[in-house]
Image (cartoon, rainbow, N blue to C red; front, top):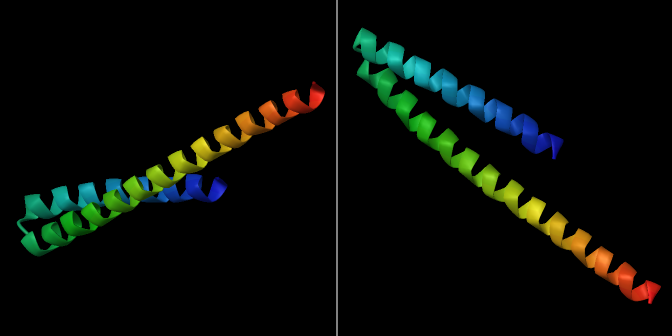
Length: 78
């Protein structure tokens, strides 16, 4: 989970940096850098969506496992 947390921070920083560099490239009229910034930003946003889906799957699996353990403990107690 720590790995996912750090990866999320790095992705956020990368997205913010690319937004700022795209803004600066647009103001300076450098369309090549603007295009590269937008392309890389799209890739980082895709990676972030994939990471969020992976984390939500892991959390739901942990919740299911905890529920299963509680029900099995109740069955053993009876």
